[in-house]
Image: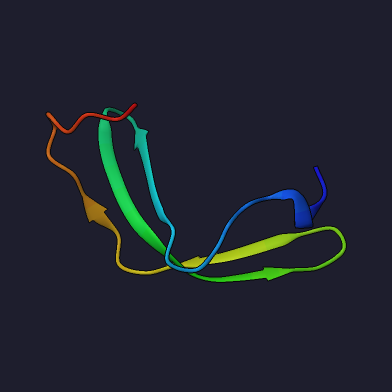
Length: 54
């Protein structure tokens, strides 16, 4: 996909699971070049183990 095809905006909430732990953060900035998307995030939050991720 081309960088302009990714629908990422500042303020979007991002959640993911890694090694059994669940995380959440907010996108702070999005920069696009012809070949890259650079995203910076705000504060990383560890979610409770029973938090549901779809």
